[in-house]
Amino acid sequence: MKKIQFLIIILILGSCSNLKYLNAFDGFKNKPYKVESTTYRVIDVDSLAKEEMAFKSIYFYDSKGRKFKSTGFKSDGSPSSGGWNYSYDKYGNETQITLYNKDSSINVQNNFKYNKFGQQIEREYISDGKKSITKNIYDRKNRIQKIIGEKNDGSFSEKAIQRYDKQWRKIELISYETQSKQKSRIEFFYDEKGNENQSKWYNSENNLYEYYNSTYNFNNDRIRIEKYRIRNGKSKLISDTKTEYKYDEKGNCIEERLIFNGKASWITKYKYVF
Image (tube, rainbow, N blue to C red; front, side, top):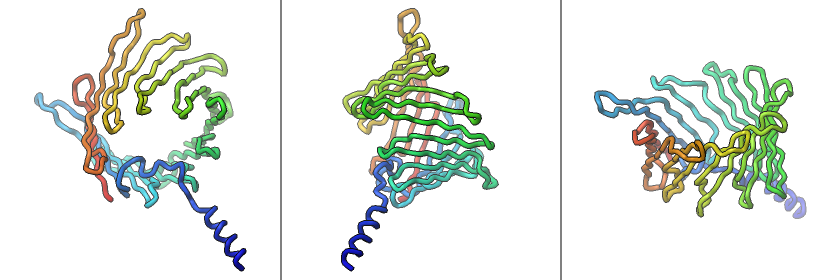
């Protein structure tokens, strides 16, 4: 009898969810079960800045931190769709995301598969009766990911090679126009805290034509992106985007202000229910 009870306990424990690959509560602190974000467009009215609501999103989480539903609203307050539903496996991997129309019919469905390391190996996208599949093949020894996309009829859609460092941070992404012709290449670099602080963009001839520099605050939130373009061997600053944050006492962002080339353009405000 004791042996049978022991086996039952082992089976129960083995089937329990450890959610080791879940980004619980999408990184929000203090386990909120509801997060509301409202984005405003900043416009000039009689030389004064005015906030005009653009859209709103509401996210719902279960006690484990899994987002199970989200809804969106237009500027007039009406629903933008029938909402999103999310499903997971026992390890916390997101296995399905479904977007519904207002009449509860399915608009878009994404299905995902993963390997034992929590890396996505397949994405199936279904919309309007058409299906496309993106497969990811990993060489874990050399930290290389091959991305292959197929259209509904099985024809070529995309191909890319992504390389990672020892911490599995992306360091290079090569995209191809065909099975062998390079379309673009991007290199990624990181600061001492692991934040991506620079990316360099190359064209099909492998010539550097753009690069981005990023700066982060104490909370590891990106506060500045500088975009440079290369012309005749010289770099020129094209845009300078800054983000200002306000946090609550728990460390959650309550306001995010986007400043483009010195002028506030978008503001997002967050509300939390715990």
